[in-house]
Length: 473
Image (cartoon, rainbow, N blue to C red; front, side, top):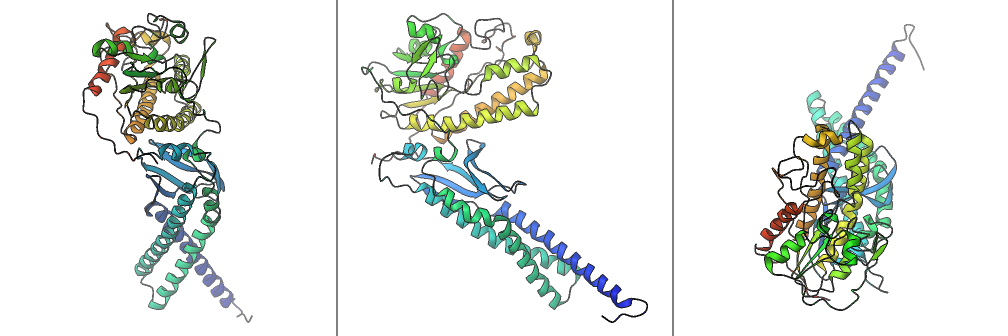
């Protein structure tokens, strides 16, 4: 290279190189912006499987190069059991549930030989369509951003064309490079999915158990659930099983029986969760109890089934105890634990709802939300270590659980009343809740059980909305 004595030519080359590098860096920034916008605005793709509607899209970019996708269920973002390669992974949203003969198979799968498995194929097709749309929108976004920059700088016509071409190439190269691994591997992984439980469910699930024993044809209503429905801490009902489960004669099941003149079968038990109590067997106080839902199916003529569940799934008693001994129970560790428990509950809750929807007699289903036992002021709870800050945390988490219960019930066209304990919280003159020193702290008193029964009765007196059901295959 020929250089002048004062080094003018090398200086020009250095300046030109810096300009090109700056332009390239700016184009890369604009390309990243176009990709980010495309991931936000690209419409999720709709797929329909067994009458159920699923939206397929992508997660927000992650710093990790591999990880689970997401499934939006009852307002919760649940990680998939599948792990995908790449910083952007599939995101699925169960946007419409139809109660039909295929719903249980869609949720739980089937082991029947030769059964058609189309869920994974539909999800894979939806993902490929989404990526095609995202690629096109990324390109359009890059052209708009680069064109706006060229117009702002009043670049010459030829330079503008060059910038547009370079910006498009860089944007698509970065887009394909960042998402290529997911684009090519995700369809193969998604095609392996044969049910929603395989995608987000637990590794081991309670098997479906057919009802055993004689039919209970005179039963008109059934209550299943945990200690709230059992009536923990109140006068026990007669019978060995009732004593083992803490089942009370003052439960809201008994109140509904008295009000309506019904024979109500109360199967609720202290400590019952969905997997160990409602759908699977439960061992409590040394007694092995059959799954409550299997027992409920013996009452084939029951017109209503009422469910109280969730607190024991979230280990709520332990959460309350922890908030009573720490200055702040809203730290990152406990919040992460609560979200983990809530995600696990949401998966099991979907399984329970699908089985309730598949009951042969199609009874009215009521999912009870939980009452608020605390109130806004600590009062007597200050002596138990529950500060106003921690009470606010507990109230917020209880509201989150109730939101999941209500949204899941709404998806299945079930009712979800919430008992009103306002003015009758634990430290009020006439509480509906047992005190901290009672046999079952924070559980309803007999008056509280009656309040729950009244909330259920209000739903029972309303017309039941028609639910479209497809004939069995």
